[in-house]
Image (tube, rainbow, N blue to C red; front, side, top):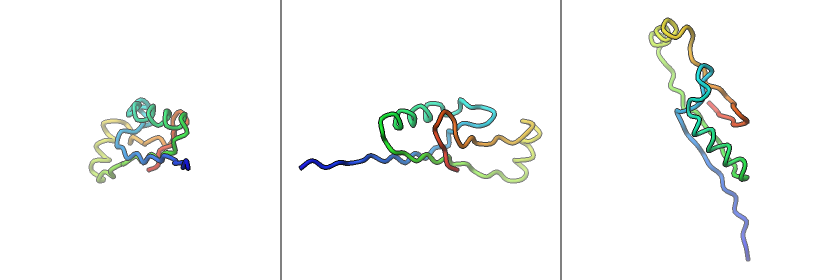
Length: 80
């Protein structure tokens, strides 16, 4: 008797695309696109550390605005 198994992948990463840098963690995005193309179910969770108010202020002064994680790029969805 042959059993049908389905593969499910949980990907936890701190390398995810940002608004200012869409190619950040591109190898993770490409790997997830390959999973999807081969019918593998996945859930990608972007681990984002919350900065203190001081760090947010410094980043705002240095970068102009705070970097936001993209929730979706090239059909790959990241959860926060």
